[in-house]
Length: 273
Image 1 (cartoon, rainbow, N blue to C red):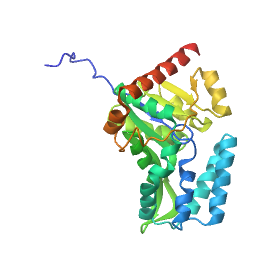
Image 2 (tube, rainbow, N blue to C red):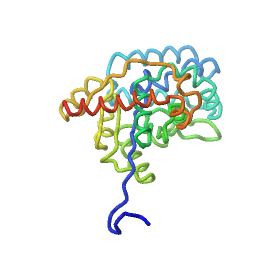
Image 3 (cartoon, rainbow, N blue to C red):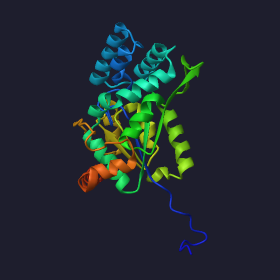
Image 4 (tube, one colour):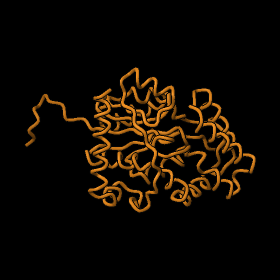
């Protein structure tokens, strides 16, 4: 027999929502695949140089709304006509070589720490779902939400069905929270960008990770904790297969303890703030 009183609501579940680029991995996920896309003939040399330059600018400056819109337009037009299955195949075959070395060790430990506490992990990214979903699986995330590009006859047509950016991230978070019974007031969120203030403000426990200038100022004004991730470390030895169970098994007690330590550190930072 349940001990819950008839009028007592069941406990809501908790999730940790992670932005991807420069929060979990050290560079743009979309631009990280420029080289394999070039090798397979999807990109020409000019496009690769252009994307590399865009990545350089993003590393030097905070990407504001206008820059993100230009990036979105450039990437969708660049991908127009690409075969969707070819893109998925390239991402799948090069995932470990391209993304594995870019994952911040601190982020992987934090993900393990949330799982150890019984929380779900959700990756929320403005990059395309063909890249975000495999990366999320590599990280052991439970769910992912990403930008969905329109497809006609198996190829991208240059349009977007859902742009997972800004307020749209909140819309996606609310939808997945409703589907899985998450209490957003008890949930966590992590991001590096001023454009993700709506995402961070949507939960009860926001944290700015490697914040750009705008987000650092916003976090200071709102009393949000700020942490720095600076140690990209290959996950191959710690996460041999892209599943949540293998993440916990390979990390073992040491990684879980480290994850708990990071969570404790974030809590202390919040308290000090």
